[in-house]
Every structure is written in C-alpha cells, then in structure tokens.
Length: 366
Image (tube, rainbow, N blue to C red; front, side, top):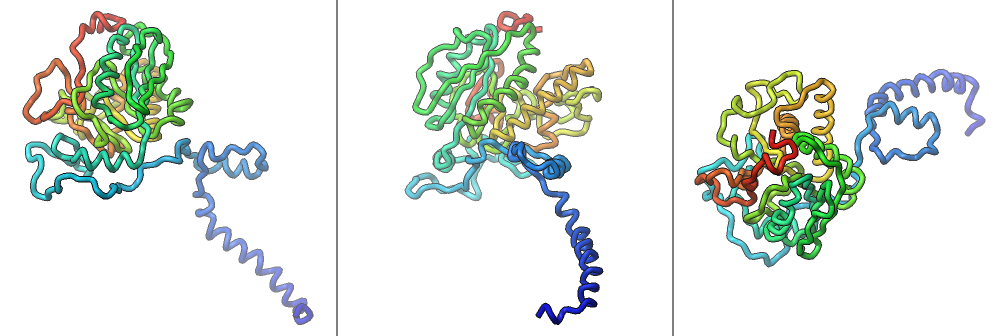
C-alpha cells in the first residue's frame, strides 16, 4: 500500500496537516483553559516544569479533606413506625419555608422519628465548637450536661472546647461516641477580642484537626443550656438561626453594619433575616469557608481601623445574605432567659443564661 503513495500525496499531507491541527487546537482551546485543579489534589513536586506552569494558570479550588463522607440520599429502613404526613395540616401561624424555598424549621414542621432514622443511617460525625475563655469556663458543665440530654442524642458528637484555662474544664459523663477535645488559646482583655478570636482559632483548628474528625460543625455560645430536643432536623449544608430579637422586625431595622467602609456593610433595603452568631452550623467544608470568611473580613476591617458593629455576627449576616443558607432554624433554637416566650415559640430548645456581664466579661461588659 505504501508504494501507491506518491510524492504529491506526501506534499499535500505536509501542507494541510498543520492547518488541521491548528483548527482543532483553536476549537478546543476554551475547553482546555477551563479545566480546574483542586488543592491539595495538585501536590506532586516531581511534575515537569511545563506542567507546573500550566497548573498555575488555571483556577485552584479547595478539595475537601473529608471527601469520603457526604450527605447521602434520604433513605429510611423498613419497619419504622410514624404518623402519616399530611398535605393539608401543619403550622398555620408561622412561615415554614423561605423565599428561596428551603425549610424554616419550627416545632410541628418535622417528624423527629423520620428525620433521625434518615440521618442515623448516614452516621455523621458532629463537631461542636465553643469558647470558654476567662470566667466563661463556669458555663461548661451546664452546657455539656444538658447537651448530652438533648443535642443530637445517639449521634457521634465531639465538643471542641477552646479555653485559656484547661484545668477548669470539668469532667462530665457522656454517652457512647461522645467526646471532648480541649484546645488552648490565649486570654483576652476585651470580650470583643474573644468574639473575633473565635473566627481565627476556629479557622486554624478546623484546617489542622477538626476536618479530619467531623462531617458537620456547629459554632455555639457556651453561656447557654439545652432544654429540649436539638436534633437532626438542624443538619444541612449551611444552617442559620433566626435571632430572637429581630424575627418579626422590618429589614431596615435589622442591626446590620451600615457603615460603607466596613466589609460587613449591607445597604438599606437589602436583607432577608437577621441571624444570630450564637448558634450556626453546617457541612464541615461549607462552615470552614464561612468561618474563614468572617475571620478574613474582620482582618480587612482592622487594617482600615474599623470593627463591625456586632463583630463576626455582622460578617456572618453579610455572607448569608449573598450565600443563602440551605436551612433556617426558628428562634426555638436559641432563645434567652431574659425574654418571655411568645405563643409562636412552642418549645425552647436552647436558651442563653442570665448573667452579670460586668462580672464575667474581661472588660466589664463594655
């Protein structure tokens, strides 16, 4: 067959082959340039220099280190007995869905038997991050003891206690699969620095330790006590809690950061809800991005000699305005012993304790 190929054929091939290859390159160029590599998926120091140069030019994304676990399908084992759900009956005194169509969770909007059966099959590991700095260690015992009675009971839970005084961390009886991990952090001279420091130390510890030990993470205030079920209905990719003081307030009256030179600035006329920073949670990697965002934006504000009006809570609300939570919890999930309970709050699940701020805060509550 090769004998039948003339010089003319070879000449034609030599002329048109480069043109053909050039057209192929142009056609697929955009596809090649849009490839992304994950970090630390790209970590081979022995790659050739030309390959390294190519990788440096494309978008780098964070790869979840706990990628072996993810939220599964909502399957349930046969034989679980529960009441038939109704398409006609339910809470009519409150809204149970947001305008971006995710659950707004109240008592009476979920069946605990069903939702626990679904999530227990997934067997998630839940991290609870609390800060007990200075005199706030006095609240540890009540928080953990009540959490063992009401917080995601029969799930794997680790309490990550950040404190400047490890010897004040009490011994508390815990259930199977329930652990405590204590992390030493510096003391602070202002309560505002404790609040802002939470984002720094949580970011560092999630990156170095927690992401290898948990699938979900909750940030919570230690000066609280659980009173009733706080269960799997709270789990989602990103879960926010309505602030008890503003869930019936008009958006222009929310205590958002209104100074435009702050990274937490939200213009008048914008806003969904006002979320508390005393309880928030979600899938670990999503929480890592949010916690890191709050820390980074606080640092940017500090460079410009400004502190957001409600510290990390202001940055949290800015983030969640433009990155909608996948589940919103009603104020049942953080009430306060200072306030009477209105009729639409059928059950108080966790509540902040009455305390003398001037006595427990390092700068006298100011």
